[in-house]
Length: 55
Image 1 (cartoon, one colour):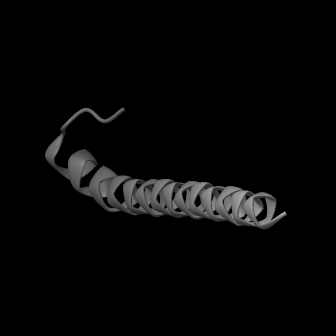
Image 2 (cartoon, rainbow, N blue to C red; image 1 turned 180 degrees about the horizontal axis):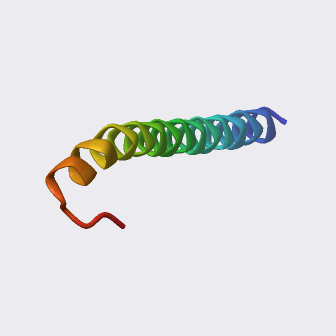
């Protein structure tokens, strides 16, 4: 009985860690995407000014 409870606790802990890691990865990806958009938005006018081809 006690072993079953501890196993369930361990499973939920693993699930929580996995969900936390996934959430952090998604947040990081979203932050990188936002930063990329901001950088591209800032760089494009400068690039056009200097005649540098942009993607």
